[in-house]
Image (cartoon, rainbow, N blue to C red):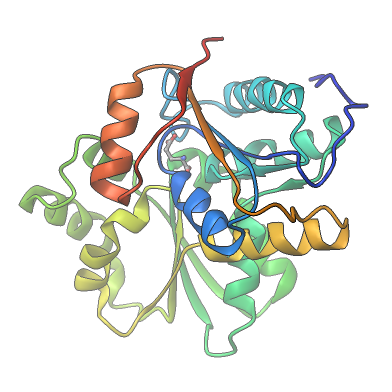
Length: 274
Ligand code: DGL
């Protein structure tokens, strides 16, 4: 995989590039916007090829590379891989191939889990491809060998959420089907290892118990972006940042899901087809 534009010049005014397979990565966009209101941001949602979570590693790496190349051509100063599946399967390859710093969403969650001593038994929920990659468990074990880690792919969560059915009774039934058999293990924390899963957070807590700590990486990923830009002296000093959104298909659905599920009003939206 080759990503061009290695020598693109950037400065503090250059945008932060964020991508996801669809609208879910907007949770990371929101956290970045909150923490860094002065930054310019370009968000890319690959709505033509979502979901990534059921695709092969080769496909996910190739889609991720294509989008990264496109964003680098827009002179981004840092790339945020907001998609967990891309972070699990393509991050190393992207870090090798492009010159701008690359932040994924797995490391921030792993750090959040490991920074709390009370977290001994961990449940990771993610797409089939992320679970198959073992990216979360490998990184967690590297940091703390004593952790007891369980992983569960929940492939029906994304379609249920994308169809706007997270509040329906059958969504709760699906959550129960996946998680009830695991409840007796008494986990200390659950990692929501997929962009979409925070939408089901209440239902998941309802099934697993209110006391369980639920970790999703948006805020931690935003903090990692801040830290990196600060180290590089690339934080923007302008008054107010602007944002642009790009999708590869179906802008109406993207705008509707962003509004209904994440309360984000999308302006400046365009389509880029590959
Ligand atoms: N963005 C994906 C992830 O975080 C979820 C949706 C998909 O399968 O593409 O893994």
